[in-house]
Length: 172
Image (cartoon, rainbow, N blue to C red):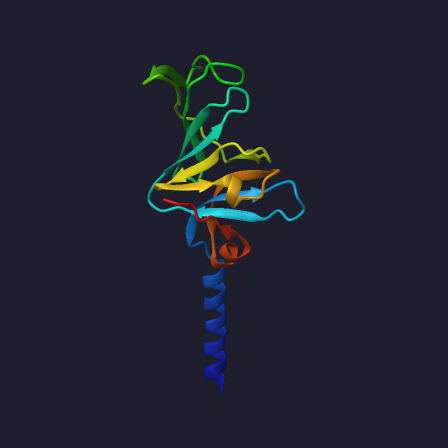
């Protein structure tokens, strides 16, 4: 009888560990404004780079931002690629940046800067807003509720975290 009790205790401890110990890294999109504060995520594998492409609301051309995931789960803004030098777009490099025109597009490359997170607003206006990761395209206008803000960060998810969030599917 005592042996069964010990087995049950160890089984319970193992179940708790399996449920709450982080098992995978994700790009998390955590809703910040509505009361629901729902979480959405993209599982990460060995690829350490993702991009965010959106249509600029003023000049209506695409802007591509490339990010790298660091070993410490921070986000490193790496490049911004765009066609139009106009309102809201950088026209020169700062100390830790280079700025050049490549194949008819402006490329701003940043070195050595990291951040824990950034906020993205997913407006109700139907213009391009996509994340590309590991050759998959995640159309945020279709996969996330529009009209809300999302905190984007790299997190380590457990089984419980996965059950609380909703995985984005994307397409090839």
